Image (cartoon, rainbow, N blue to C red; front, side):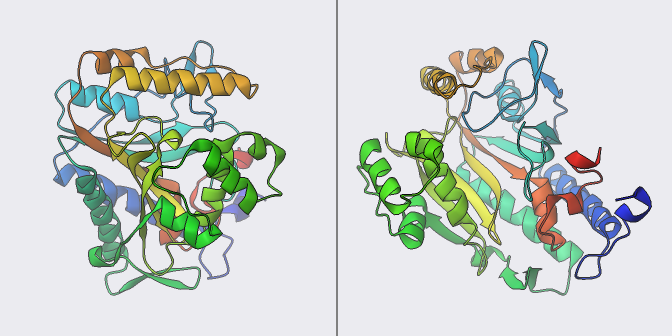
Length: 338
């Protein structure tokens, strides 16, 4: 498409991409206003960093001996360890091979954390930001209108659901409190016997794929906070809920996962073990091992305070508030338009 038409072409609702981009600009202003009023420090984290996450599902862009940042989580935690009580970042992140209706290899992420805070406090930040955006943009609207659904955003309308409840409701899979990985994997394969061969070999990938499909069916009657996750799906969350479960919250609105948060993992040995297992899984899958953020690990080794944080996909949030189904509609330039 020619640039002379790219931003002026109207969608099915008669709204142009230019109009959506102007709305996006306003949303970002509202986000910054909220966190500044709450006393957060906005950190400017370099885009080029020395270490990255070894998470099997995240592929970082390598640039010589460094990486383009895939998240600012570790840097926010380091600043909190250094005395900043509440920190947020609103910046570009990069993840290779992610390009579809909800993904762009370069994307905008909001991340924030509070020292000595519970995950429930962070959830209240999330709800406050989203309701503030809605009431500012649409002051007379009681519901968020998205793809024909009317979604209530008021604080008392948000629902909670456990990982177990989601899988039982969507797949009929009952995950016991004391599940073993082998038992869980057998149940997953029975529920989805024709899953991709790669997923059949790797339990975590199969579980993530099933989760992605199930999430697309919730959050239409009300936003959902999805809680209590299998521990091996999370590499940086507090495991105090038990060896099999971890304390984590994923927010879903209109079938779109928009935010993910958890209390700080504070134990150096546990975090290092997660990293090493993740890198081993990468190598077994034919992927390159990655370098860790050694400064982050050193911070954990020296002791870290309690707290919690969350990451929110700004592009996806803008999709919701502009009634868009494709991420390109709220980007100045999508990956294939450069």
